[in-house]
Image (tube, rainbow, N blue to C red):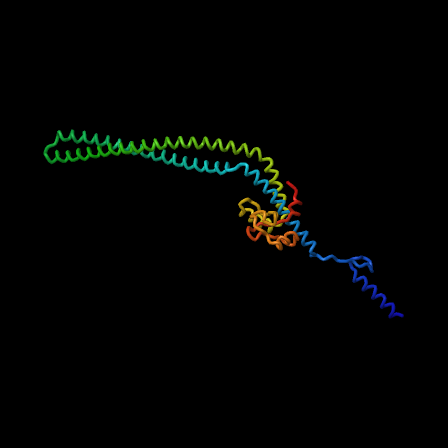
Length: 286
């Protein structure tokens, strides 16, 4: 009898051990699998939906910015050109100033030579022999040549300075014209930016919020594809059995894989991430 009671007790303990999560004996609980096909599909689908939603937001930002057209580049080119012209103007002004200094120095040198000539001519009147006279004559001749050379250099420097002043006037006119063009382009750009600034700020905020929901690895891949794409599209739908980015045909089996949402599929031609109609239709306009 004692043995029978012991056996029954053991059976009850075993029953409790088989069902530890129930809290009571005799109520079995089915433990779900952690990686079923349904959960995989749900995970991949949610990632693709998040990426396509981000692409929709970024596309609208690109469309707003495209309204500005080539204006930002034109403004940048004008600013660079103006900076170059201002550098040339400064260089010409510096060169003209140097030439004027040289002219002033040569003028002083010529004046000194003329004064020495007068001095030597006066000394010639009081010489005691031919030797002293010849020596003073050579000095007068040398100073005359120095004065003539200084006069020649003065004319050359003056002509060069005048040529640079003419070029400087042309540069000043060109610079004024470019600055006027820049002011007009900047005003036009500011008007366009003012019109779209509010909408762009809202979309940028949405983009940042959506990016925070996407894992870093996928976000990095998305941005890399987007940067390399000419139209900025990294995630595209399949349209008429073709990639919505490069328009190359997609094989039927690959098209089926896209619809099953078991893994992220990229176009084998352009590398863009592909989504099906279901995901595209689930993403509402932002």
